[in-house]
Amino acid sequence: MKLPHKVKIVEVGPRDGLQNEKEDVPAQVKIELVNRLTAAGFSNIESASFVSPKWVPQMATSKEVMAGITRKPGVIYSALTPNMQGFEAAMEAGADEVVIFGAASEAFSQRNINCSIAESIERFRPVAEAAKQRGVRLRASVSTAFGCPYQGEVPLDAVGDVVARMRDLGCDEIDIADTIGVSTPRKTQAVMERAIREFRIDGLSGHFHDTYGQALANIYASMEVGIAIFHSSVSGLGGCPYAKGATGNVATEDVLYMMNGLGIETGIDLDVVVDAGHFISQFLGRKGASRAGNAILAKRTA
Image (cartoon, rainbow, N blue to C red; front, side):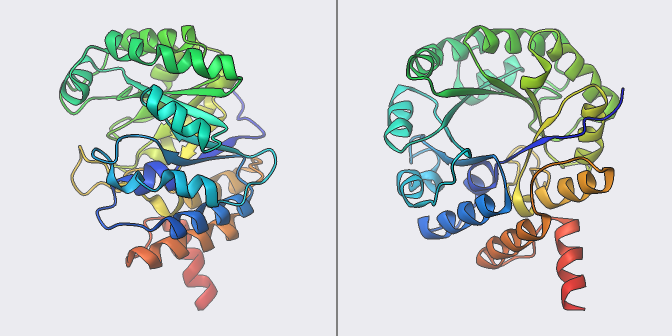
C-alpha cells in the first residue's frame, strides 16, 4: 500500500513526556514549551493531565498551564481525564479534547489500577457521556497493545476488544500504544490491522516508544497499512517506568526528519521543534534524546 501524503503528529511532550520527570518543572517552563510547540505548527498538543497530584505530582500545575498558554485557533489542546473530577477540571481549564485510557493487557490493568479491563472502561463511561453532551472531542489510548511487562504477549483479539469498547463509548480517535516499546514492524502491522477491523482507519493513531530502537520502523510499518496519525514527544521526553533506562516516547524531531525525507506533509517546522527540544533539554540539564535534533544542533554550531 502506498504511504499517506499527509500525516497528523500529536505532540505529547508537555504531558506524557514531562510527567515522569522527578525534578519539578515550573508551570512557566511548561507554558513556554507549549507555546513553542504551537508556533512550530502542531494541530494537537497534549498539554495537561487532571489526575490527583498525589499520583502524578508533576501535573499539579495543569490548571495554571492551561490558563497561561497562548492558544492558536484550530489547535487542539488535550488533557488526560481519568474521572469526572478530572473532566470537570479540564472543562474549567478550557481543554479542547479529553483523553481516557485502558489497557489491552488484563495483567497490566489488574497490576496498575486493581480492576479488570472491562471495569476500567466502565469507569470512563460518565466521562465519555459528559464529553459527548458538551461537544468536546474524546480520545482514548489503548496501552500495552503490543506487549505487556507482566504477561508478555497480548492477543490480537484483546486489542480488538478494547478498541471496540472505546468505539462504543463514542471516541473520536483511538491511540494504539506500545507502552514498553517492544513491537517490531510485522507485529505492528498485525495489531493495527486488527484495530482497523473495529474502528475507522482515519481515527486510529500509533503511539510508539523507542525502548528497543524500533519506533520509526513501527511508524513506517503503520503507514504501510494506512495509519496516518502518530504521537511523538519533543526531544524524546518521557521515560518508561516499566523498562529501566528506556528513553520512552519516540522523538518528534526524528519523526519529522523521516517524514520530510519521505515527502510526507506534516505542517510542522522541524527547526522550530529542534529549538523547543533544545529549550526543554537545557532546562532539564541534559542532552536531548533526539538523534535528528542533536545532529541539527551540531550542524548549526559547526
